[in-house]
Amino acid sequence: MITFSVTNFRKNIYNILSQTIKFSEPVNINTKDGNAVILSEEDYNGLLETLYLSNMPEVKKSIVECLNIPSDECVSEDEVEW
Image (cartoon, rainbow, N blue to C red; front, side, top):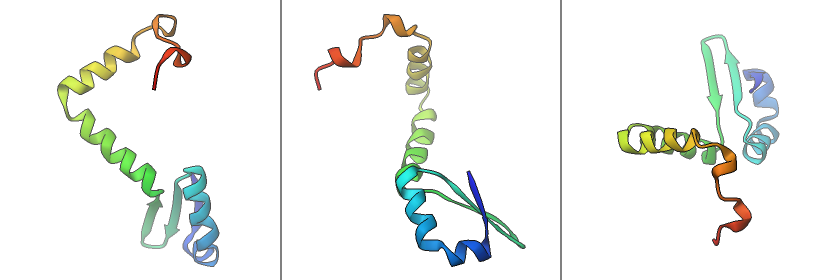
């Protein structure tokens, strides 16, 4: 995560936001009243989707089970018909 003071963020807002969107790098903005984090819309939507799916017990169980399968037992991406 990249960190900027609010003053530096203000000076470079366009470039910082462009980099956040392009490279999916969250930005931490420090102010005297506290901090804020900026995410790309795509990352934000992905985070919301992850939270939504992780609150569904059957989906969460399925994901955990799949994560425990050794990679040599998985089908290669080249073998999948999209």
